[in-house]
Length: 134
Image 1 (spheres, rainbow, N blue to C red):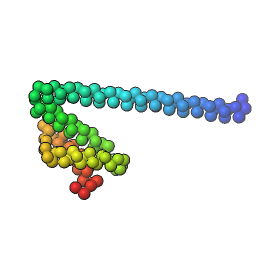
Image 2: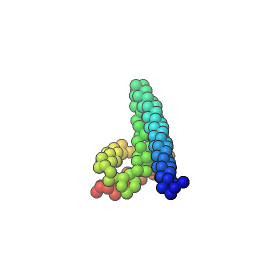
Image 3: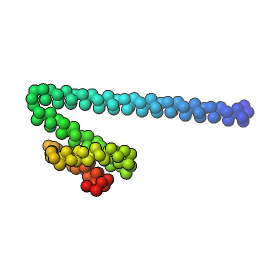
Image 4: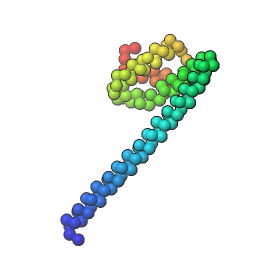
């Protein structure tokens, strides 16, 4: 086999391998993100039904507590992303949303039964200190 034919076969093999690898990575990522979105939406739907049932049964206390827990979880989850140096720089609405939560928590303080959750919420709200003059 000539040197030119060997080079062509090597290049075609490399390009084919790169395309197959890229396709597999995209398929895996798509499947993974789909599962995350489905899981999150399912969980949100179940919590919403619980909150709606509580409100319809005139049990606002359970609905409010459920929403407070959801807010704690959301804040702790945001810390993962907004705590990175580029977190707030991506979109100014992130800082505005966090400020809205901080203002709400000042008006309506809430303590979890789990100290680690309270620490996570505190850390999330501290992120705002580095971004604004509050």
